[in-house]
Each structure stands twice: as structure tokens, then as C-alpha cells.
Image 1: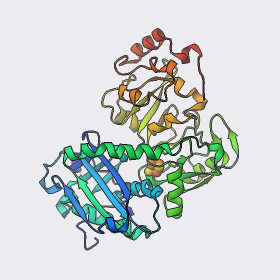
Image 2: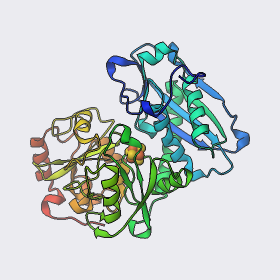
Image 3: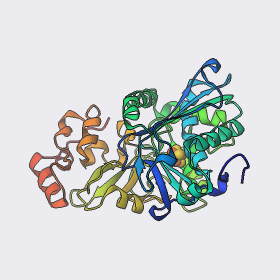
Image 4: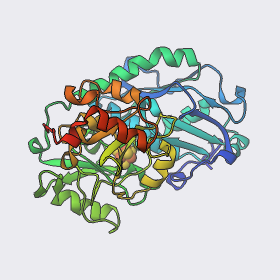
Length: 407
Ligand code: SF4
């Protein structure tokens, strides 16, 4: 055990999952309405190194077994740090939290989820301050460019809700930077294997037109991460030869997937859900799933609590999709991938989508073509495949009529 901390730390704890029976409390996740994590770069004068603040009830004041809101705000400073490294440092919350014995971190941004085990609580991890101390220790010892770190944990639901819109704006601005940049414009892509602790054959291939499955790392972030820590989990992927411009098959990505999946897979189509789809880990924001009855796709996101028309919930489908597999017709993906001009281009793109939760349909209204928007069913139109077949026939879904205009 590291003396200053109540629990041990190290990569050996990555991959330890905390199941319900072992859970002391959890923060964020599907049961907590408000949660997010955000890293902000500030000037050295603005960051009081080592400061840890807890706003709202701390772990020892919470009822065992509960799910609670949480915002993790990390302020960093360092002479060599640049604004574009914020998302990279933010994604390290996932890695470092999973280094901590008895803590488990899933997802990212406004989907963040942290679980604390009963054993870790008994060992003395009873305050978010201890969690903060360990994070600061890891940030400053693992990334020398970080000179100052201060952390604020907020568990007060009202405060988390007040600050969430700002975080969403920041995430949106990060994603916007990619607009207009195409795969053809760059010499290399980036890869990430941060999720291999839970999904040993998974590697994200991140291009300007396909961001990571967790939605937290885009091509710019990949570049910044590689520059920040060339030996870290994010690395360069030479594009190699473009073998199939529609499916998005590149010899460089194939080579990387063969190496990083330990030989399990040797081809990857970046823009198709069939044959050799991208591997899926467990951190994906959503699943794009094939519905044979309509020969189209459904898209479901992590926060959708109901069942999809195929009778399964997101969590059931996630179990059948993730773990590092290439699951044909079931693709873990970032929701923002739907904004990409290459979104499942080989399969018909957005025109092949027939169902999605109302919340997602509204959120992505601006990218769904006008002649398609009303033709995509939601939970209000179809709760099973019979209803979906009836709906898409009735409205004359463009995919069924062959009216498809890919960008
Ligand atoms: S989903 Fe991909 S980019 Fe995100 S942490 Fe996992 S491996 Fe890295």
C-alpha cells in the first residue's frame, strides 16, 4: 500500500469491476441524473496546487448502496500545457481512477460513473478528499508537464445541474473543431487502447471523421495526447493504403488492429457495421444495431432506460456488443459519429437509421436530413419490431424507397 493513501494504487487494479454486491456507493452512472467531469487549463496563479474541495455531502455522509450526483472539476496549470490537451488530461481520470484499489470508473464527460467498493470503504477510503489526493499524485507523477493541480468534487445535485450546461458547451466546442477536416486531409490517424483493461482486443481508431467510441477523444485530442505522452495509451496509426474508400478500410488501420487485438482481428472497416466492423469496448456512448425486420438500424444511447424495438435494453445489448469484439450488426460508437459525413457510409449512413430515442433524435435534428427526420421512429412510435415495420411502411422511409443521398 502507498503509505499516504488508505488504499493501494497501480495498473494491476485496472480491469477490476465493482459489482452490485460489492458496492458501497456510486456517483454518476445511469441512476444519477446529473454528472460530469471536466478538466480546465488555467494560469499557474489561478491554480492552488493540491487544493481539494468537496461541495455537498462526502462519502462518509452518504447512505450505503446509494447513487449520487457528481461533478469532478480538475484545474491544471503547466508552462508546456496547451488548451488542446484538456480532453486528454480529462480522459486520464478514467485511467487513474481505475488504478485505485476499490474504485471503478466508466464512461466520460456527462456520462461519467464512479463506483466505490465496500472493501475500499472499510480500508479507509471514506472521503472524496482521499480520491482527490490520489488523483493529484498520479497526475503529477505520471505527466511531468502538469505542474499544478486542484480538484473540486461536487455532490450537491443543484450545483452539479447549474454547472452542467457549461461543461456541455465545452464538450461541444471541442467537437466543433473537427468540422470540415476529412480523412483525406491528414497523414495519420490515432489509436487508443485505454479500454483494454476491460476489453483486451479493443483498439479505437480515431480519424477526423470517426471519433473514439467514448466520444471523449477526437483526432485533435489524439494528436495532442500522443505529443504529450508518446509512450502512453494513445498512439499514431499510419493510414497506409486506402483499400476501400466506402467501407473505410486502410492498410495501416488493419495492421494496427492485428497488432493491438493480439491477432484476434486483422481487418477493420471504419465506416460499416458489417463484416469487419470496428471493435467495441465498454465505454461507448451508444450502440447502432441492425434490425433485420426493416433492414435498417436502430441507435440507442446509454441513458435510454427503456427497451428498444428488438426487446432489449441498452445494458443487455452492451453486454452482447462490447468486450473488444467485432460484433457484426451491433456497433458501439460515439453519438457524435452521426455528424460525420462518413457515418456508416458503406451501409447507407443516416438514411439506414429507422429508430432512435426521441431525446437523441431531437439532439441531432440539425444533422438528420429534412426528408428523413419524420420518418425515423422513436419510442413513441414503435416499441417492438411489428410496430416499427408498420411505422416505416406508413411514412415511406427513404431507405425502403431507395431515396438515399449520401454526402
Ligand atoms: S473508448 Fe477508445 S478512446 Fe475512449 S478511452 Fe476507450 S479506447 Fe480510449
